[in-house]
Image 1 (cartoon, rainbow, N blue to C red):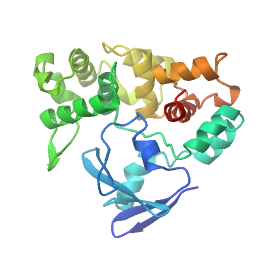
Image 2: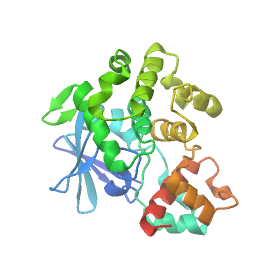
Image 3: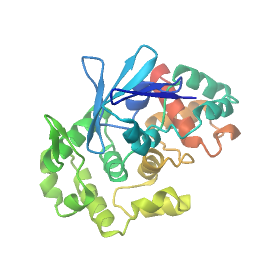
Image 4: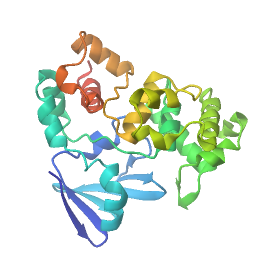
Length: 274
C-alpha cells in the first residue's frame, strides 16, 4: 500500500508500485519530460507538475494535501489496488516476468479531451514526434501558464477553427480529425463524461463517431482517461506480444484487467525487444 506525507505544500509518496519512468514514459502520456536536474516536468490540468525521486520516496512538488486528494490521488490511480492486481496476474508466468521487470507502472486518469487528441496525434507516429505536435498544439492554442508551459486547448476553442488553422503544429492528416473531434465533443454529439459509466460497447461506439478514431485509438482513450481496465489497445508492439507469447489469447487471470496487463506487456516488449 502507498503511504502519503504532506510537508511544506509538497506531497510525498512511498510506494513499491510507482516508478516515474515506467509511468510517465510508457506511451500513455506525452506532456512529461525528464529534465537535467532529474525532475520530471509536465502540465496536468493547467498546473505545472514537477515530480522527482528522493531516496525511496517520490515528491510531488507544490501539490498540497487538498490538491492531491481532490485530483492527483485518482490521476495516479492510488484508488486502485495494484498489489492485489499483481498477485492476480502472477498466475501467468510471462506476466510475472513483465511485472517484475516494470513493477512501478501505473495507469493515469488523464483529462478526456487531451487524451482524445493525444491518441489521434499518435496514429502512425512515434513518441518524440507525438510530443512535438502536442507541444506546438498547446503553445499555439492553449493558455500560457509560465515560460514555455501552456495549458491544453479546450474542445470549444478548437471547434471554432479549421484544419488549415492547425498548420503550425504540423500534424498532417490528423488535423482534420482533431477538428472533427473538437466539434463533436463541444456540441455534445460525443459525450465524454458518459464514457466512464456506460456500457463498454456503447463507449467505444460513441468515440468512433469521431473521424479517424478506430478500435485502437478508442481503447487507448478509454483506458488512459477513464480507467476502463477491460480495454486492450493493440499497437505494433502488442501485436508482436500476442503473436509471440499469446497466440491463443490472453490468460484467464487478465479478465477485466486486460488494460493493466497490456501496460506491463508493452513495457516488457519494448525492453526485451520481443
